[in-house]
Length: 304
Ligand code: GLU
Image (tube, rainbow, N blue to C red; front, side, top):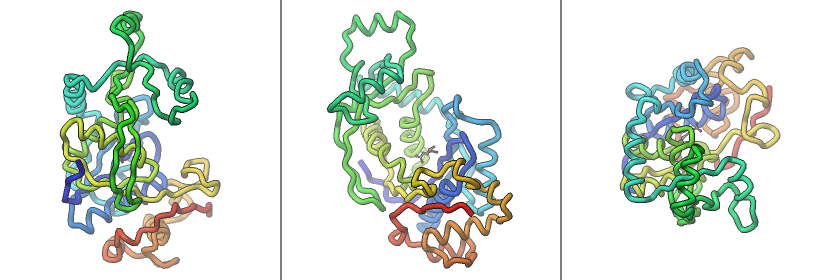
């Protein structure tokens, strides 16, 4: 159920690597959407995946936001300090029998989901229909298991503020990882509801997570936010921007002699909010910003 009417927004980086100018542009957009509506803008550090979190990165990410002037309300929260909320949500789903253990390895899933008729990247349901005995045998073997939710191809329809009507099937996706930590999908849903986020503004690469998140919000009886998936910045090769594309982080840009104001100006120009060479401040950008006028095509970043 998408019924939020307020516009509180958030930026939710994973501290797994430095933010690049595409991530920073998404943060700027999320800030503009919220502030334009006189709403709160929150920052949430998505640090649950301990194998990918790198020390010191969270501090650098927050410092980059500050240097651009993107201030947030209250303290940034960390998902690693909120695991009780996710445990509780998992318990509620499990109680209603929406979950089942999955013993598949990554390779099992890859092999099964590349079979004909499968949807690429969708779990084909291998462990959904294990008999009690098969399940008990696997558990007894000590193999670690994940918990999957029974999506079973349910269709989720939603309206994205920028991309328009979306309609996707939901597979049986993981909500609890086999390393004993909550998965991104459940943590995001619980947090967006608990933090009373009205509108999620994030990169277009996450649009296919949204049906899963709406599905979970519905099962948990939580208010779901509205969504605006914003265009990405791509490398010259058309791939998602990454380190290998050159000097793409704030630190890199500063090393190349740019100031945070220069970086902001590049973002603003790429979004049609500034002329080339002009360096408007955040107040000016806010005055000019109109969500209806955001370009819908990705921006190609050219090394310079
Ligand atoms: N933490 C996620 C990422 O950095 C973003 C999650 C979200 O905005 O919902 O890709």
